[in-house]
Image 1: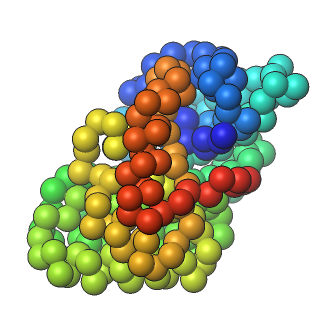
Image 2: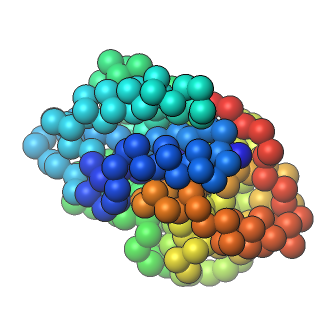
Length: 253
């Protein structure tokens, strides 16, 4: 059992100590736990995001996960990662900044289109019927995936498009096809599944089945006890099985 999508309290919307997540993962039979808190981003214009690790806590995050990696190396594999958006104007400098922490992996979670700090940037989870916004989201995800920097795409269906369904199916089919060409897995998001969010979107996962993308389940854990929620995890596997999707049994980043 593995999970590469785990947050910490440093993002401001998760709870618990880092070690509690590791202990829960061990207690519930996980072989690998990956921490992927929202990456600190260097915004040169003074903008400060309210949902990611602050710059002054960046080293603490890396040091804490590395210490747990060493402490529990005989019981579980612990990985240091980040969940990161692809922002066209910032990506190169962000990669240079993160390199100092010698991380193990990145996952692509496109919470915003454009570059977040811009007045016209849009949060992907907000409802929109704009075809332009859907196209922009898809373009940034594909371009981000093409950089080769990311292990998989987190909640690829996070874009909350409420417009024409035929257009949605056409465009999201294109997204799935392009990501399959890159052989990058797609994440079925457990947090969205258990909290009845607009994702996982069944229409999208039907597309995934038809296209044949590789799939992982990401807990998107914001509390340590999520690792103990075997009942809902079984339901997630059943949901995917009914769609004809079998998540990867083994996946290493």
